[in-house]
Image (tube, rainbow, N blue to C red; front, side):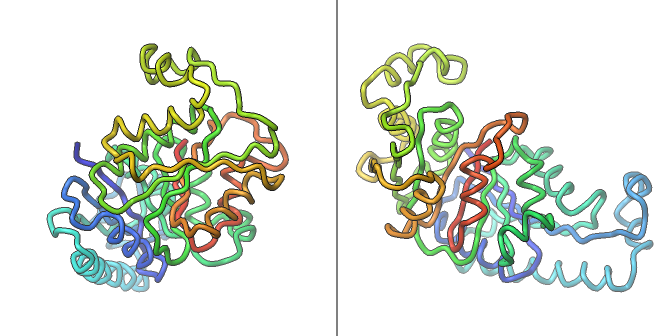
Amino acid sequence: MLKKILIAVDGSPYSTNSLRYLGQLFQQLPDINFHLLAIVPASSLGSAARDWLTEAELLNTVSPATRKLLAAQKKYMLQATDTLRRLGLAEEQIHTSVRLSQRSVADDIIHEARQGKYDALLIGRRGIGKLEEIIMGSVSATILEKCHDVPLWIIDGQVNSCKFLVPVDGTSHSLKAIDHLAFILTDNPCAEVTLFYSKALLGSHPRIKPEDFYAVWGKAWCEENLRRPDSLFHAPQQLLLDGGFPAERIFWLETSMGIDPSRQILRQALIDDFGTIVMGRRGEKIKKGIFRGVSDRVLLMAEEVAIWIIG
């Protein structure tokens, strides 16, 4: 099945890091397409007016500085396409578009991700302080807050490893993250996946009730794979195997160290040189408390690693 990834770019070094990440993971894999999207802010008109103007009409209303930025983004798209080709992606896999904003940069990116029914949205994160980023509301932070229905790949810095670390906790959103990973990594010749669990806070494996998962994976699959003593690891592994990922590149890791799951995840990623952390997150309406969710804290502290968030 053809996969579609939307990549938000802006011509910055952070966008270039994203391109290198894609080339590293998906070179010579023809069943995946990439759409590079650049949104140029056009703030001279109110949002209501921008909604009914055509692209050509909108272009006549913007400032010379905006026109210059639009031209620069189009030039960058040629460079980005050339970069991806040199990294091993075929030209027919790469699509580009540069647009003036109709709403805001973040909202336009989210709208495209939903309308185009993309399998994931990739965004590079700027290298400012992570707490400062959340408070000030960068594009990536805004997308993370608003977009819960499209898997998000957030790239921080230069990522040079094809190893994936996947925390598991026996919840449905954890299994959905694995499901997404299995789909994306079909036929990938280099990726390795480690399923990771720490029982430091809970003291034992979480109790898994197969009937809670019937609606997504069906009764037969759940009864077979979620009623085993090792189902915490076995069920995620089976999803990967069902997706065609090879068993010899799937590993299990359990630890009792530490007290904060988010710090344990990042520590393990650093120690064993994992390039990507894949996490599920709870729905946007679920209250997370003063310390927020584990995925939020991982994103807050992560550096030089890719974080996939599946909501």
